[in-house]
Image 1 (tube, rainbow, N blue to C red):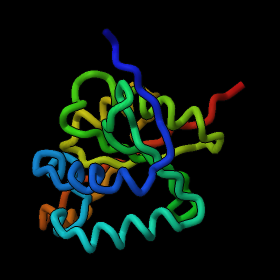
Image 2 (cartoon, one colour; image 1 turned 90 degrees about the vertical axis):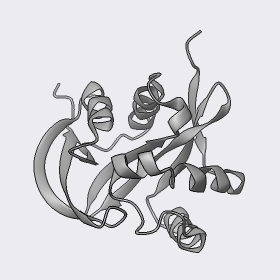
Image 3 (spheres, rainbow, N blue to C red; image 1 turned 120 degrees about the vertical axis):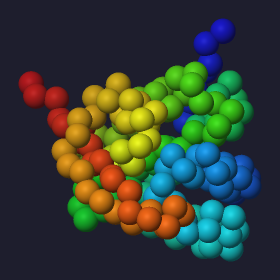
Length: 162
């Protein structure tokens, strides 16, 4: 049976699951650009409170068959509208990320949209490519959780030309 994936607004009751998901060592290695100490709950709580209060940030929980499967969000950096997603390890490899991203971009009329991923994060890059994102640049950026420079790819989803 195919998974039923939905997005809903992030609520206070979701924060424990989000914290646990974002400190999974394998996921931190893939994401690269995370908190310096992913196990620091106080830092997580401060960060998530800032994000939830910021103008233009829309944070969603990804659900798979009604259960927590990750997060997806929209935000603005230097005037560019960006997407991000983080899928819980138990939901990897089943199309949950692809469907969550499809739902997220269908809710955002602004184009172009941007996304960023570590060059080594081939799974996320494949999800972004499947959604129509294309690479626009590569830079070396410091990844706090890894403590080193990592190649970061910026991608864009351009407007559909009519």
